[in-house]
Image 1 (cartoon, rainbow, N blue to C red):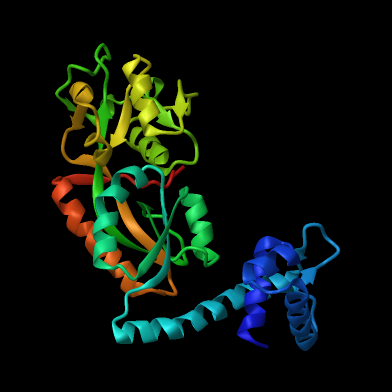
Image 2: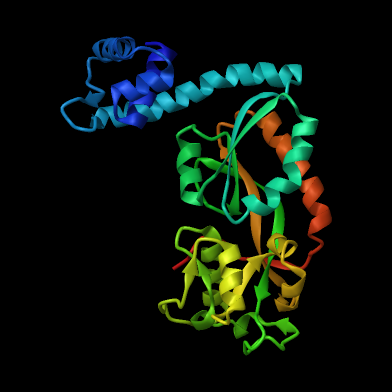
Length: 313
């Protein structure tokens, strides 16, 4: 049994196809198939059910893949130990960022990080929280920036900052003249929300449900982007909530529509998250240091109340 064989098994399990797995591993399909067959012969079990289209794992194959992922991750740790010993901060690093954080946070820290650590080759993807969790668990992301807590057994979290919610209330809305908004005044019936799948949406739902009894009504309008929510609100279709960093880019003519909550202000916790195997920790620490140093100057709020992105029933 070799680590290369286990790596091939993981590739086939992910792609459910020998040809695609071979392409991902940069080997020929016969080479990959032969190595997996050798492993199956050695273990005297069938890892894959080749009669299914697409290929599926057998029951014992599922258990083997779980263990193979642990072994392959641990093998990467050897190089990681050497890099840390040498103080080397470089190489490829795959980072996922949720959509409601990406457009505001990335421009704030990326240039500084690249300048400070030119040997790190960042590969950044905008992904939903569910996609991030899956990819971290499967070893396809080194880390991610997401709203927490997530309560995932295999994922560790390091808070970066606490971002307050801000009301965006158009002229003519019942709350437009209110100087400080009380959470109990929120009403889901006139709230514009992001589409299902966005963790910021879950935070808004939790905020309304925790502090005010409300049934699960159908919502008036939903959108895939915060920018669209602002435009819809400007058309008089309802109010919405924004993450604080998004308010920094609001047009001057629209800033009159920004209304803040009474303290403690509801906020979301934004963290850098990674697998419990703790690979590439020197890069994770560097990203954390750069972001916290920059955001500290942008968010001066201290008295906040964290609203979990988890939709508690």
